[in-house]
Image (cartoon, rainbow over all chains, first blue to last red):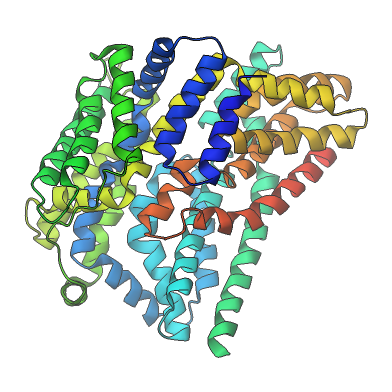
Length: 222
Length: 317
């Protein structure tokens, strides 16, 4: 039971908005010490796991090219481009992106889009441009809401698309786990049963995007 | 065979450049904090395998200290002004999209074409690491395309990359730190303790209750651990297998698949899934760290309920 103190550390630390890197480090020590490890053993285990997970941070290699195209005006271009298509409102635009992200993820192409390489340089500015074209100058709050919605849409598209692809990590984990429990299962069956939830996610989030769009237009009209 | 170590070497060099450029940035009051932080990351990539476990542990403490004591500032590399950008956007037009779209094209090429490629039985790319390798390759090619097409200064990829890296700041390392914390949790058996708590205290005699406990448990556990992969073995060993599959005869494929997706609903709602939820808020310069999560909760909660219903209906046909 004492080992749960580490979980509590994380919850409290995040809630009071201490620096998360510090919170995570403290939580690692609390958990390890509660489990009977010495401080040095905790530090070694933490360092080892950090080193083994370096691939996570390597994703920032896309930042240089994104920075260069931003320097040359990509965000501005993305913003004005969408304004020229008067018929495209923010709701349908983000629904299109949601569908694109779900379908490509379902084909295993999870890394062709993402927050750094597509949302920041293109999708978010286009979404803002689409709102702007309808309602004029954006307030800070509207800007932030629109950007956050663009990011949320990327995540939802990714999560509820990738499990339809048979060779994605989560499917392999499930196949492996069930195999050790004596249940042989085809990856294809697991991915097939991800489809109903994927459809539900699309319908639910698309509905929310339409409501979001309508709300922005109402508040602009008022 | 090209392995992940190539990506690490490249990452190390890029972060080392960020560190050096940070140290030379007189406009950043905390420039040495930034230099230390990105410098430690560079050391991790270039020498992580030679530092030993304890050495890596000390390195992580260094990162946490620089971030935790507020020593990180935001670099101010010389860049174009908003007016200049508008003018450049007019001049370059749709050409501006080409470097950014080079990324997905090369990644897709890497995953679909290069990954299966073999020369005399040896793979060109390490098949297990094809995605990160393709992404790194795409990043390099796209920088080349951008420099040639848009005629930007040669140093600009590193300076602009550093500008964006400083925008993300300490949050950039949070996903990797949380992954390491996950390993400590596993070592201490945290998952097992929580799994036992759930199965001991909640009666699951009725099929619907059991389905609900499994799905909500997957989501709740993912919120605590930040990762559905950590929740899946615990919840499935505790509830999915013994109760849903063995006792009630549920279809294992449906139970596992929808169970995992219930966990993904949890991922949408937790700050511990930092790379999906906190890093984007930093990248998009949102003042509220939790702005993205707040936008996701109203989709995630109803979807979780849909998952309970779907599993109840589909697993016991």
